[in-house]
Amino acid sequence: MQPAEHVTIDTPEQIALELQVAGIGSRFLAIAVDTVLQLVLYVAGVLVLSLVETPDFIQSSFVGVFGPALAILFGFSIYWGYFAAFEIFWSGRTPGKRLAGIRVIKETGRPINAFEAIARNVLRAIDFLPAGYAVGLVCMMLNKYSRRLGDYVAGTIVVHDKQTEDVRPDWNLDAQAPGAGAPISRITPEELQLIETYLHRRLDLEEEVRRDMAQRIVSRIAGKTGLQPSPNQAVDDFLEGVARQIRDSARYR
Image (tube, rainbow, N blue to C red):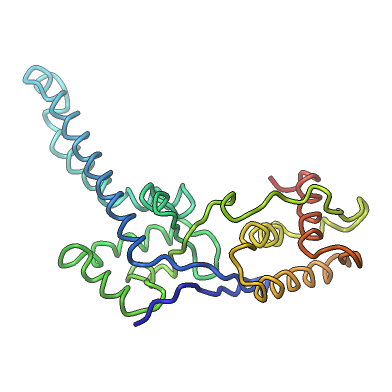
């Protein structure tokens, strides 16, 4: 199946976000880096155990009794916990994914939670079969969004995660913000996140998609607050002003 370069996600706010799908190449680069790091952790653990397991130390401590169990627990934690722990605490990224510029998100475009991180990585053992992620590779080749079995189970997708400075120009510091008495407080944290996601990624969007997305966001803001861009104000400047005023109000950090 021909893989798709982009995926369009309809957010709960009824806004379509277009994200670049991570292909097989970038994902295997990430897994290669993570596998090397896992091996380094294994070797480090073995070295530590070999240093403490001197004859005198073994006889005088619990290491002699529990050493093998600790080694098994350590190996289990590295194999099963490495990916899930990083994806939980590092917003869907592992060191390998960060290097490859990709991350895991929900199908809805939201960040993944602990349940989804654990679920997609439990299935990694099946995706690896019979060796070298053969099952996962075949599964990725049979769907246009390059999803493996773990992604289907957890409802996730892997996309390119471009750094903000690569896709965002400096915000217009002269952008006119709404008046201080405007009902900005009606804008939710999720809507602020939506505004800022658009502003950060707008240069990646096609012109028509960008205009349509911006107008949808403005319409949503207008429906809740009554705020509208002034006649000579660019839509992006208006959205920048709204986001800046919300941040300046210190409601969201």
